[in-house]
Image (cartoon, rainbow, N blue to C red):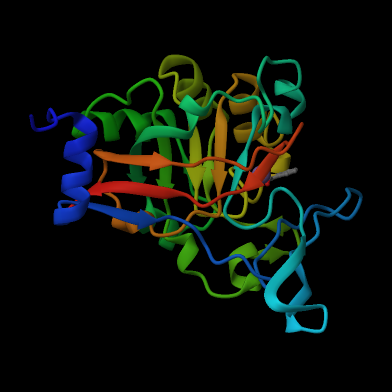
Length: 262
Ligand code: 23J
Ligand code: MN
């Protein structure tokens, strides 16, 4: 008897015949990978350093391997609810206790690349989301909302972090928009192409860092430093983003994949 056709056997067939593509939403992770630059009164997160343990040499004649040293929030990474004080007392709020169901979800991609090209401090509002929904349908509970800004196309740390005398400048979300997404749409989380889920100037917003404060306070997740969002349709992609199972971890570097209809 042939095996029954299931959604998973169909998925494998569609992957094999190219009707479903795997798009890598991850930046390369190396010593040059930009890391968030907080004001100097706060402790910095270190960039990646790599130390060779052995490379087919006297320290290990047949094997190559490295030791890594890096902040949890380096490069393309996952923010768990415990990362922010607003999420610190929630159940299952760490990288090792989040239900793995949350590591697979549909993506709503909001393209603001034209707006951001005109204004680097562009903030997505509730009305922008409502206009997007008018075109593409209501954002489903449990969906990732991904902000396509094309910011990942900026080459080098300086252009990517875009620090000025008054702090970094990069796009993000208004607090009102984030409350709408968390409370009225029950999203899985928000993802961005910039170094963190908040706008560059968000330290001065009310509340400070609203993407962190509001999303994590509601038990929602974050994805930062995403790439290739321009290869995703507005709806219809499925994102797989599973953090390392770090005990008590606040987040982790992550390989983010999207399954996309060709
Ligand atoms: C700590 C403080 C402020 C921010 C962040 C971390 C991040 O963006 C992050 O990577 O979670 S804005
Ligand atoms: Mn982070």
